[in-house]
Image (cartoon, rainbow, N blue to C red; front, side, top):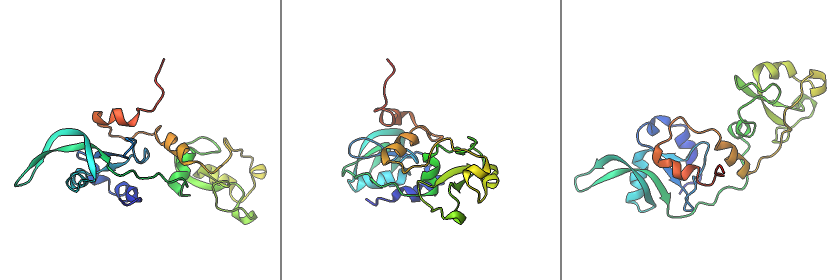
Length: 194
């Protein structure tokens, strides 16, 4: 199973509009929460046919071939465990997720870009510890100035997130579509109210 399958499905949302299948690792946890690990129904049926997954839940709708009929899987479980990545890739998406899709100067959630805390013009590097999510107005206001000279302050210090931290943050941003058959698998490890 290709470890970078997430990218192709994130960039092809039209394929997920009808009957997407939630993909769980062999330990019954989603491969990723944000973006949620989903396959188009065609990929799920193909994986079932190739005996790479087991079906944990199904839609009422069926698909047919000349020789068989099967209900469309809504939750599939990989038969082979895919080891999660320990190292978190330094990407714009992961940076925004770490900063919870909010400007680290004013808290705005609109018109986000990223900013070097220590500007590159002053020797700042592009790294987890020096880049934060920033709205365009704050980014323009700060420009190539230091925090002290710009009059801005950070809400949180930038840091290298762990994989577990991004998974936890990703669970706070559910996708627009959550099928009821997925509920038992998405939030089973959250703490219950007493």
